[in-house]
Length: 223
Image (cartoon, rainbow, N blue to C red; front, side, top):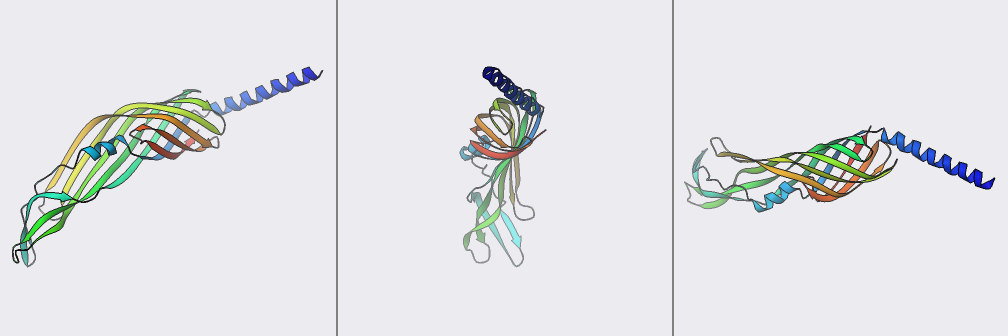
């Protein structure tokens, strides 16, 4: 009798757990927003400096005039962290197909050697702004190897492309306005991803390498 009761209780537990899993698996869609650190395009920017341009030679201002000489120098870089929006559709309990859009960039002040035509003095003067803006589209597959009602673990693999747009503009009328765009292949590999929260709203964090960054964290909505 005791064995029968235990067997029935075990069967009821299995059915209950399975029902919860099936209910949870009906949330086939997920959208997420994350912020990441050290994306591929950011690292690429470390090794490819802003293009050196030749400053516009002569500038006339009220009461005086002067000349910029040679190429500009650049101030410290100010980086925009990688911001990405992603979507996945779960074709089965362990595989989601979709991808993400990512944005990151940097800004740098431009300085030129300025010689005043009246006094003859030469000084370093702020003359413009240089920037890069990187936009990426990466189709991605998500592999859920632990998917429960309130917690999950997964990996991601994606391959796509990035557009890196560079602009340099001197801060006066008629000054140089340099623009350049390159397109590069790109990828994302998240070796370990974890998500936690309710069935529909969850926080998540990932470790990996790629355009979303070596480490990223965000929030997602599942439905």
